[in-house]
Length: 413
Image 1 (cartoon, rainbow, N blue to C red):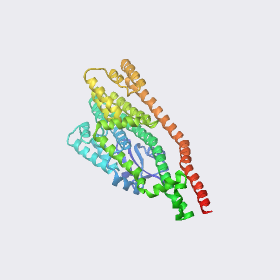
Image 2 (cartoon, rainbow, N blue to C red):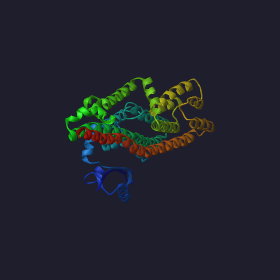
Image 3 (cartoon, rainbow, N blue to C red):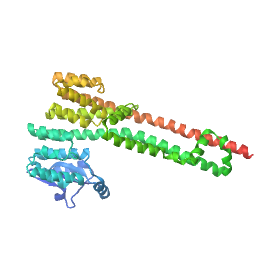
Image 4 (cartoon, rainbow, N blue to C red):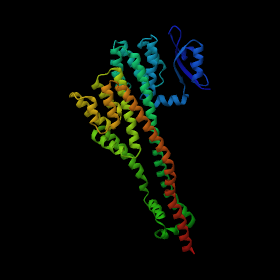
C-alpha cells in the first residue's frame, strides 16, 4: 500500500507533520483522498499530501538533481500561501519547508533563504539572490504582492501558474517525444537491415557471392557497400554531435539562436506547436504580472525571459524599446508579425475596455487548445505514416533478398 507524508494545521493553527505524528513518519493509505479524509477526521486541515517514492528513486533524485522543478515551485508557493493565510510567519513556514523538502539542492537554497530573512532581508529581496532556484517572475510577483499587501493572493496565483507551466511542459515533451522515437526507430531499423542482409546472404551462399555483387539489386548492393564502409554508420552520431554543438553555440550567440528557431518554426506541425505553447506561457506570465500590479516595463521584460522562444524574445525586445519611447503597448505588439492577428486585436480591445487580463486569458486558452489539438493530430497521423514508412524501408530489402537468391540459384545452376 502506498505511503504518504503530510503537513496539516490543527484547530489552534499549529503545524503538524507526518514525521512528528506518525510512528514511522509516513501515513499508509490507498490514495490521497483517503489521507485527506483521515486527517479531517482528526480535526486537522491538510496543507500538503505527497506520496513517498521508493528509497531507490529517492536516492537517484538526491544524487542527480541540482535544479528545482516547476512542480516543486508550485508546491512551495501553495504551502507557503496556506501557512501565511493561517497566521504562520514566513520564517516558520520556511523552517517547515526546509525540513520537508526532499530535493537536496532546493533544500540548501531554502536554508540560505531562511538565513537571509532571519538577518532582516525582505522576502522578495532574499528571493532575488537565488535566481537559479526562484525565477524572475516569482521575484517580481512577490515584490508586487509585498508592496500591495496581497502576498497570499500572489503566491496562490504563482502556484496556479507553475501548475499550468508544468502541464504545458508535459504537453510539449509529449509532442516532441513521439516523432523523435519514430525517427530513431527508422534509423535503427535501416541500420540493422544493412548489417544483417549481407551476413544472411553469405550464410546461404558462402563467399562466392562476392563475385555476384554487381548483378544484385541496388538495395542489396547498398547493403554490401555499407558493410565495406562501416564508418558511414557513425553519420547519425555525427549529426547528433553537430546538433549539440549548435545548441551550445546558440546559447552564446543570439542571432544563431534566432535563426535556428525560425528554421524549427517551419517544420510542419511541430514548429507551430512549440511556438503556440511558448505563446501560451508568455500570455499566462503577463496575466499573472498584470494582476499583481507589476510595472509595465518590468512585466514585459519578465515575459521576454519567460517565453523560452527566441522569436518571441526578439519581438518582445523591440516592443520594450518602443514602450520606453512612449508608444502604447497594443500598438507596439500589433507591429510585430510574429504574434497572431487574433492576439493583437484582442490585446488592443482589452486595453481599451480595461479588461486586458480577461482578454489575454481567453486568448491563452484558445491557443492552448489549438496546440493540444495539433499535438493529438500529429500523434494520430504519425501512426499510419510509420506503417507506410516501415513498408517502404523493409520492402525494397525483402524484394532485393528474394531477387538475389534467384540470381544466385541461376548462377549456381
